[in-house]
Length: 253
Image (cartoon, rainbow, N blue to C red; front, side, top):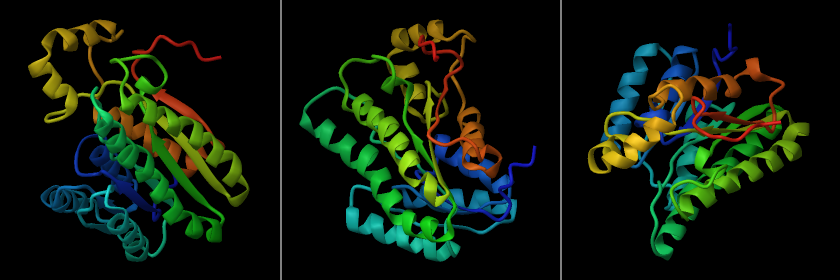
């Protein structure tokens, strides 16, 4: 299938590793021009160099999404460097953890205001050109009670509602907004890789819950994100796609 991504301009926030980097690789292979960021300057440089082998334009600079002014300036720079924007995928997350108010503040700034500021930055361009695709990244923990009362779960759940509201409001502008909720994903240096080494019983319990007996890979999530972001998914707007290998127990009617 031709996804129709050749020549599209995509901004990915949090693209130095894991699902973000895998998504950038899929889009680059499909012919997209990319602007990427992450907190690590070395990580961004390495990702830009790796993605450049696919032949498209790839630009990137390190940025901390919690620093609102710097983040907004980066988004403006990315749009200018690409000469526009067709696709926005804000992936950066503060991650989970139970604890004091600092967890809630951190999760709100990164997992909620990170996407909010990014969407606000790209909307004028997308509205002017009457087209655009925005993919928000939630989690299966937003749809089922998992891992205890965490800010991460609650903040990610808010993106599902907000994504639907954006889709309904901006459909008239030719802008599609969809949400992807990954299940547990394992890669070297990632959260589940660390959990395997430090909380083996918990890790094994999650494996037993997986019908396939394994956790997902970044590439398996990335391919779904790329499809929803692409013109091939032109009639998908306001959708919430759970990509978890059957991990969750909900029945969707």
